[in-house]
Length: 302
Length: 214
Image (cartoon, rainbow over all chains, first blue to last red):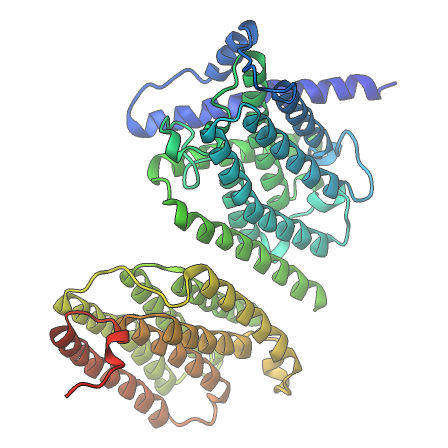
């Protein structure tokens, strides 16, 4: 019965650490711009405030309006539990769990888009359409990245797939996965999380009509997804699983911090791309992962 | 040894894709010239055991010619003709990028089946040259502006140069320097022609050159 406390510890770790990342990104952005910026714990305050508030429900909306965010949040949490943490492995691990991870992420996106379209607002339909159409390209990139890891390690289980470093194609894979991280989490070259112009928003346009606890679930889910992708990126590139427990925890934390600061820097130094240029960047991410796959394949053949 | 060589050729292949995906002329010219310089280093890597002054000269001339002289000529022509920096593609950026990537992968697969010398079998020289030639073709076919077509031609030439490196032992220095001189003179003349096209048509769009006039 060691399993239950360990599971609870993992849950607490994922749930409590996730809202830290957007805070760090905002702090980096404020630091680059020479402002003081909101406190690092701002998202915790926001979540606590939203949790106490009531829900405004449209009369048109079906219960899917509430169920969507809840299912999306649960799916993301399930994906987080699949993700191995260094030598400790994942809380749940089996042959082929990487497929479940990809499908859980897709399910979360589907539910957010579904809940967004419940109120019948035109803006939210537009946001959903954009999010889903970018996701098609981002998913191609992430599947290519996963394939390259599978070819490199010869395993389809996340535990063994992510523990060694990605070998010769690591730089390509890192660049590709970083672009996927930015696209999947709606960060700057793809979408501006701070924008309040309905015509240009993507993720924010989807959640315009949500309020109270469902909005809190969506925001927390988004930060969970950011943490999930940065952990995936760090573990795909660094041989975290082969280090001693303390060293791997340190490497993981330092890597996630580096990725977060990197996102903040990208966000401060780049402008968002015009919509028609976004597919080009996503195709670039796909090609980077595809060439990492090629390198893994060629390296394995020799 | 082969590792460094493959890394350099891989860099050149990456620059191919940057050239295909870039939407602005200065980026395209920069990618092309950087590729020329990267390829200029190649003879030094291939022949690092028995360096003599001729190989050093070839490498140096290639780097200076393709990395500095030709791009500066192109930039001059661009400034003189005062053209817009945006590239108008016939084949869009995403399709051309996908074509280039597909071509690179096909070149790798093809090079495996070719009967190469054993010392070249493990290197990326042949796939790299085929990929560059293909990139050059895509740029030549898919872009409307004369200057981006010139860049395509130069990337194609880079690919041929890379192929020629396989024969570095038996190619005389005269051939290498002759090719380099030809390319430089070619770009020089194209610089003048670009200026003339701009004056005659108020645009560098080669689509306007398809109809005959009295």
